[in-house]
Image (cartoon, rainbow, N blue to C red):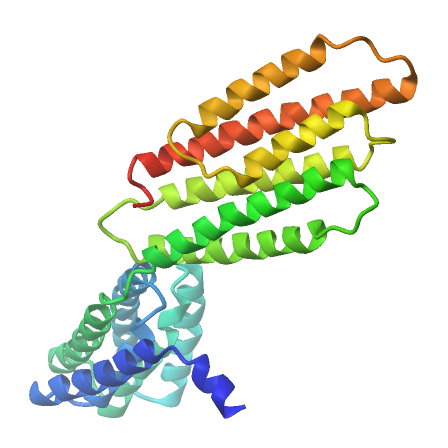
Length: 329
């Protein structure tokens, strides 16, 4: 059990919080600020999982500090420094923070107000003292969280794995076309693909929120392509499951899908496969008319599959264009 918890600890975050908290307290002590330990608490409240969240939270803390100081001054100077005025302050600041969507700063506001209450004054001296504690804690929190290792290489690997899983599911479908009764791994492989999509989306958003100066939203564009391919695969499976028999054209389609699944995509691969698909569709159109209803239905299903494959190849070609534009290098 202990090993499980140790493996799931974010070691970098633990180190940053420990060092940042200690550093903030030390700096506040050097500046001879009262309640210097609160600077360490503010560091803990400032550091978030991503850079963007940390900066956004810091802006919220600025608003929170200003509101806290204003309402502390009003409540304590109008009603006196007593528990009644402190309670009224709490009843004002909490709903106000929720209204402004900065509820993360409630604890900080209450702590700062408690300092004014304990000192029995909201003079310039104490406002500056609290401002110093706030500036040190928030500043150190932002600075230490500017170092978050990029996960861009991990995203590259996951997206490469995603394309491989798409190919695996595609090959499963090709096998079903010619061997519908044979056991296959379609359901298992589709589940694996969906799990990878979910984890990759999470990694992608983390990367976007940790990249402040460059635009990495193209990762999301790639994810949209993968999800579109997943939807096409589900449509293909739905179509081939309706086949009543295995006509000769089914073997041709299966072979072509196998070719797509096993092909390593390069710059011209998408165009070549689209040309081959075009010839295949033309060939099916020029074949003799079906002799019965069953053959008609089966050939209609196969033609629907070809239409889906066309969109699949267009999507895959788009993904390749992203790679060629150095997005994944």
